[in-house]
Image (cartoon, rainbow, N blue to C red; front, side, top):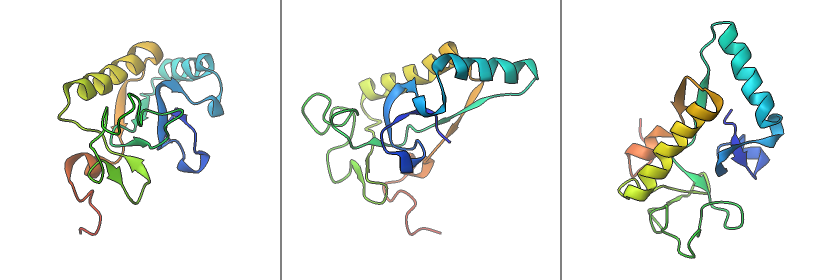
Length: 135
């Protein structure tokens, strides 16, 4: 499961609203750090399940319409919408978006000492068809 903060419980953390916050559903930030430190003491590598392929479409607690537009972090609709997931798709051609996402990865490594990443929804990052209906 993804551990970044999310508003929609049924998404299991895959509709992120706050990329720089650990979900309070699993304990405090200090408890997450302690869990990772304990894993490291047992020589266990800890990977963060990263959702940089899409984000929550929420406007009150997410990035959607952050600056009042629908394209600050995301492609404009319809390209910027994932119809099956009900979420927004990042605009990777934007330097600011890339800096945001890369700084997010660095922050999790430095703040929580994650060892690496598992990227969710890679087909939506690579293909306009999102891998839907393709074998």
